[in-house]
Amino acid sequence: MKIELKEISIRELTNGYQDNEEKGVVGFGGKLDIRPPYQREFIYKDKQREAVINTVTKDFPLNVMYWAVREDGNFEVIDGQQRTISISQFVEGDFAYNNRYFHNLQQDEKEQILNYKLMVYLCSGTDSEKLEWFKTINIAGEKLTEQELRNAVYSGSWVSDAKRYFSKNGCAAYSLGGDYLNGSPIRQDFLETTIKWISNDDIENYMATHQHDPIANELWLYFQNVINWVKVVFPKYRKEMKGVAWGVLYNEFHKQSFDSKKLEKQIAELMQDEDVTNKKGIYEYVLTGKERYLNIRAFTDNQKREAYERQKGICPVCTEHYEIVEMEGDHITPWHLGGKTSADNCQMLCKDDNRRKSGK
Image (cartoon, rainbow, N blue to C red; front, side, top):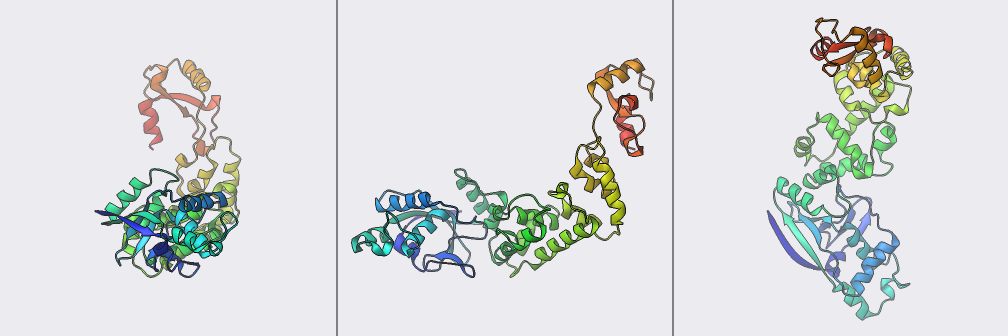
């Protein structure tokens, strides 16, 4: 791991600055990627960027910035994007400070700003070293998310193309599947979720494998397939569908045929069942048949006490006597056969018998 502290003048930093959709945000003679794929959009308000210019004009020190050294010898901003863009926008004449644009300043004032020295740490090393370094410098302020950190480590053509689909406000993934995923595209939640699905929860290995792929078509096509499959199998949308692990279900069940009308009837009944406390889990349940997704309402302490007294502490399976703390509430008629979580359907079984019954 190599870390080098370097002085960079604002003149050098802003040389070749440009901000456009095609080439991104670059500076330092075209060698610095100011907004790499994992970085968030520019979020400084007027007062914040004016505070940066105020600091520079008074020759006060700005906080140190961090750049990563790429394999091709160029750089990318890891920490300091907002300050860098604020400085560059002012020098470019995009906004005024104290009612004066940069071109309105006297020559000596311009020179003072252009000669101002920024302190920048340059970091180069292995992927794992860079990841640890990013996490270390990311302690203060608004932290990068885990996916933003991964994007930094595995930056390249693949991440850049993936961002086009998954990481911007109003991006294609949001337009297609925004109702089905939690989180925010610009904080990389959509990208992280989709890679997690396609990789069976092995995100870093998937990104390492595809880091230098020119495009991310495989990921985008997979996402489209997942969302379109959901819309066909479950054509009636409910708010509970947002945040379901759709990719996991798609991976397991997309080759099977389902009767959407029968599924909808079952879902509607389960939505009305007061014993089902996790309505979101209904979608996993109707495909897997696993009741654990439903969080079936448990018997109350009063219901369990009544059953215990009625049984005089005797487990009806093994006929042994137990203290109440050694027993668990059980549905006499199982929930999936229509049994309700009610006092008259409650019996107390010893823990061993109850777990043997539950495991059948």
